[in-house]
Image (cartoon, rainbow, N blue to C red):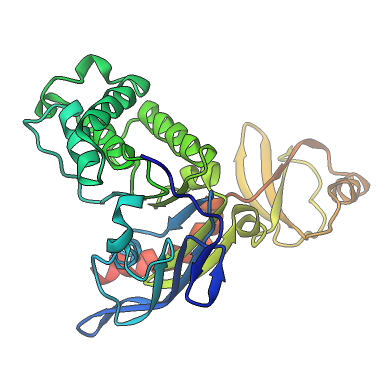
Length: 324
């Protein structure tokens, strides 16, 4: 199936370099506002992470994007179309709720979904066997899916959503239920899609996957945008920290911003302090040595995407659990 990949899409009199756009999306269920003014734009060929705790509204936004749900307010655009339904053969979608015909074999299941997207039967079956071979399932290609583990079945479903070589791939919590080995396989598949010029959007509440894979991310909490930008821009929101280890009987450390003792064991005490953007680690070490502190170790700790996530949406998740 030929790929109709476009770097620039014309919509009416407008030209956009975004394959996917949401603007001011709102969605209510009665008096509960599940999504409140979410906007984002996804560029061709990037991996875009949709991040938030459980119940944040990630799946609702994805369903609105795909025209499964209708927004109460706002605008959406996918591949130059106002409705994803009109360009469905160019989109691959893995829903949060998995669904395969358990009596089918992997090769027949993947062939079936590829044919739904317009592929010819022979080409679809050839593509199915190629994918199963590439991702380690060729030995079970003709066995019933009902005999598979949850992880194996999920791999089949992921392959089903990319068999027709879509331009945009949308994966809702794709790593759920996969063991570490198969999580790595899926990460490699996502990178392979990006390297082939495809655009990938995936939702997750596990930051390690997003940190390794994503070019840009959106973080939402309680249906609202908390952050939108690159992973580096997200990490830059929090200061670096300096961890200092001393003999527990050593002289007191000099006054440092946010200094706190984080551990004490085996005759040693460990402290952490914030580092300002332009602050020199060497300057702090000199202060300690000038104060007579005998340092046995120091480490600069860079903020992670997980740290930013907890800082921006952690309270939202705690309030949601309390309300439940």
